[in-house]
Image 1 (cartoon, rainbow, N blue to C red):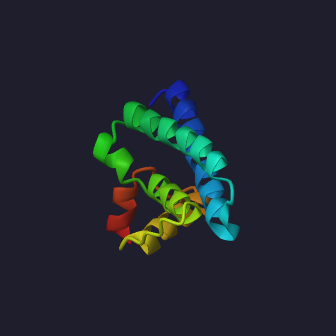
Image 2: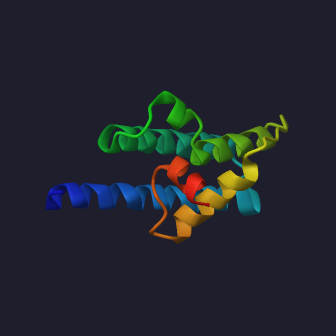
Length: 116
């Protein structure tokens, strides 16, 4: 891998790690501004597609089921009083927490789930 590719990959990882930290803040103490969450969600989705493009991971299904996306949507539903729950909340939260705190966490959440 060239130095340029390594720098791009490091920058992409830093973006994902920053998004993970923001998602944790959105969930606890809990965001109260739905428009702010929606704007942030746009950034998350753009970064997820950047990962798909640069790292060759997944596609639409990968983006749609990514824990960063799902946890943001969960908070939006909470704000809209359209309460939802899904079976994967705990594992999604654990992955996002790991991504936020541990640089060894893979960008592909599916690989992380398998290692757990």
